[in-house]
Amino acid sequence: MEQQDFEALLERFTRAAEAGDGEAFAACFTEDAIYHDYIYGPHTGRAEIAHMMQELFHRDAGPDYRWEMFDPVCRGDMGYAWSLSSFSSTIPDFAGRKVLIDGMSRYRLRDGLIAEYWESVNGCVAMVQLGVAPEKIAKVAGRWAGWLHASPAAVEYLGRAKGTRRESAAGAG
Image (cartoon, rainbow, N blue to C red; front, side, top):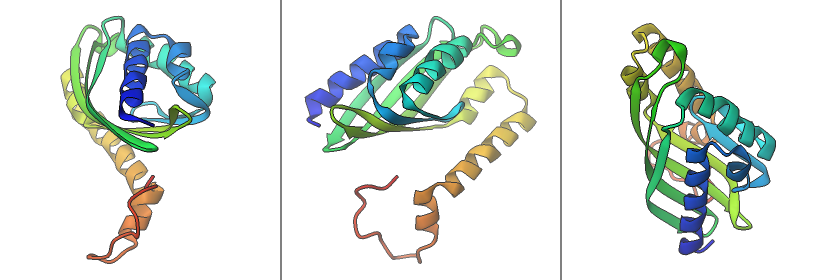
């Protein structure tokens, strides 16, 4: 994918997310795409991705949700961008609390669409802004650590000795 096409895709992606338009959001993905959300977990296929955005995320984040990508970089079938997002929680225990998050997004691209999406966000910062109890933060952070350690890329990385490198960083998942 060319840089300008990636930037246009990110604009469609974030505008659809802000609008809570699950169908338009899912249309940014291939039919078999996987969206790895740091709160709601992985979602596979357009129907699941649309449901996650519209029925889960927008249920909890509310109508003032914003998401903007900065400094996007695209190299062939991989793209990256830094982002800021914000919302006021609609979750009853945290209703009205404002949250600001920064994150990094990684995109595997195919045929002009997103085939796989990962995000790296310090969710503990969001939970502190919400007023989540420290024990709950520890439980969630422990789950995230488990996902990280179980990921194929981390397993492969930890299985190599210090000083060794993969033959190619391309294709790391």
